Length: 446
Image 1 (tube, rainbow, N blue to C red):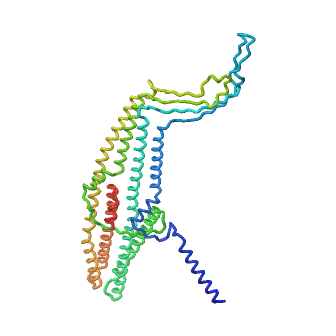
Image 2: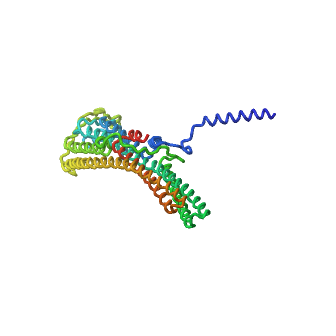
Image 3: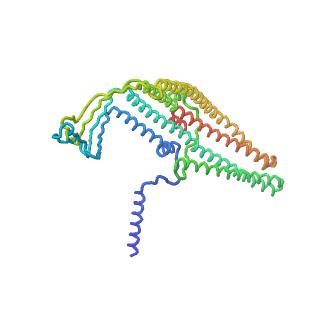
């Protein structure tokens, strides 16, 4: 019996494991390690702001299709029911009493008709409307691209913000360990009678301050982690990408030209200028007549008792030329032209501003890269100075304050370099977003 139970239990365990393997992984898995590229791909699929802009593109596509359908005729069916107080009749008694009364229209009237209106000429308003819809679709795509680039920059700040806080926390933990060792050595030296108690107290104060700084850094790390989890809508994500401080492979003029050629704001201004031009042409088209083909078919006119001589359908051409209308057509045309000129000036200024922004961002990236590497010598000096001070303190040749100052100098220099690395990667992400070179960002950060 025991053997049967053991076999059954083993079979159940195997079936349970097979069942677990068959379950797909949850979207919000715990403890996810994500590189920056993986985080960005996840944001592209799940960011609500990007989804909203995608819906805007979809909406503009539908409106563009609707504008093309304006070339179809308007066809509708009308139906009317009317009940008169009494039938309409023709009284011939004044002519002759011998003639009977003739009914012309029944008391209940039902009218049905099929109507068609097909514009033949509108001065070009329909063509210009189609062009405006196409341009608005392009503008919506540029708005989507701008949202993606802005979100890319924002993600870089949040993602590498966690990396920076991790580096600072790790550095301060190392400094805390060093402070603990120094404090333990100070206690030993005091017991041996080699240093005064004040030196031990100085080491203890330095250790306590180091612990407080580590706690503060840990708190900031947790806050930045919450920001990243919220941005990704995930739980317990851990960045795995480090900051690689490298010089961009292309020169300043390359990024400037790429920015001027591709940045969505400038492209959007191009679309708006073209839209304003088409809108002006629509205002001009209002000076021309509208010509349309019209026709109707009366499906039932039996309310007329003598309808045999009446036609059941008609077709024709109608034209309408407004002579005077409220609002004034010429001022509207002039206003539309002013809008074009205004957008031209706006784009000219935007080009200057974007060029300055691209150049200044590139120079800041290069300066941050140079500043980062220039601190290597300062770090080596601070590390060597701390070693010497610790050795000197153990030999009674240096005070506790000198060791503490040397440790603080090393800590501040390491944190300064990490902060500059964070500044560098944020500026780099900004430069790549301006020039739409996100792929190059990954190349530099591999």
